[in-house]
Length: 425
Image (cartoon, rainbow, N blue to C red; front, side):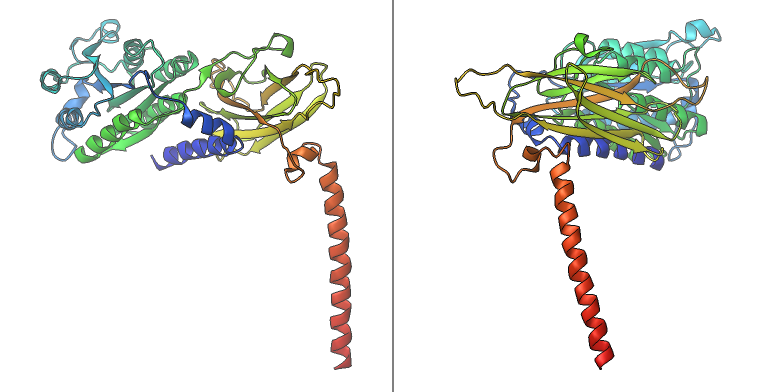
């Protein structure tokens, strides 16, 4: 659990560093009005398989702990959050796997819950069948389908999926659809395999994993996740980069999400008017097992292929996300006849050097990336280093050389003076 928390914190921190380069983008997002915004949606997915009978949570069964926490959560649902409940393994007690792997249903529809009705529905549950986590996730994604509201699935289970399809692959498939859906997972007294599987599901969608061994911890964590859904967030727009700049989608100021396979380069275009500055940042996350050494590259080039500026970062496997950014100011045109020259087309290339660990690493979908674009007013005075072409850096290199030379001369003079004084005394 601690390792997963550090991984999530590192990924969030890397994205925060990238976004720190872009104050204009975050300020604009914060200033956007919330009028007419759809309410956030949360679906609680509860494991009701036979193993939930085990009495190892504060002397009571896992099912009893889950019911108690659900009742407490229902009493504390924020007014602006729509909530639903789905079960897995609640109805079929038989031995046929094909039938057991279809055993998932929506217990309570997503909406503003009637607390009495929802509690009554939860009270009827009894540990019964299999553990079809993958089918339950697909069902929950359908329950939350449509609209631009933020969506969150909270999966509570005590064991591994017992069906044919790896639920981690299902989570990647859901994330690749660009539906802005996060899956948080909670493991009730889990073993190592269960922890690994639930961690993989959470990481594939940008969610979190938590181990739970006490009823109060379960209630507190689920409440926290439901309330987190109500917090305002910037939702990225799904975009599909091209294999070359000529066919790339045009991006404006905003936050975008895409997928890039291992060894694949993605291209995007931005129109940059004179007197404006392009600020761009990209974060690529490893949502599956990859080799430790990795890197991410963001290049700005002209339509003719000449590189303007680049940003790059390298990693050694200590975090699951890498970020980098760049800035490119376009000066005002020196045109005396008053005609406004056309905007410059800037091609942005995103590439990463994450590598797989052999046949066990899933090749599709590609690794998730987030691209932030901001076009702001260009530098207006010499105090802004970007106005001197910091991307090329020649003036700064000369300044550092002069400062270094003067510092060396002064230090040499002081050193010789100290030696002379010491000898004379």
